Length: 95
Image 1: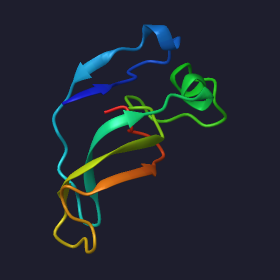
Image 2: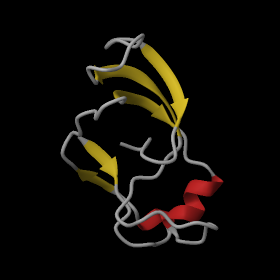
Image 3: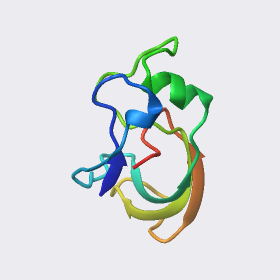
C-alpha cells in the first residue's frame, strides 16, 4: 500500500509517498481503505517537527479520513467489511 511516511522532519513539500507493507488489524482494530483524507495546519507543523508534541519517527501523518472498511479483527462487533466510515485518528490517515 502507499503511505506518506515522514522519516525525518522536513518542510511538507519534501515529504512523499512510499510503498509500505499492508498492516493487519490487531485485536479491537479495523483497517479502512482510505478514499479521502485531510491535510491540516497541525499536519504541516508535525511533519516539520514544529508541533507542541513530536510523533516518533517514522510516522504517517493525517488525522481525518473517510473510506470503506476492508478488514476487521475477530473481536470487533458491529463493524463489517464494506461499511462506509469516516473518522479521526491520532495519525496514519495518509496511508
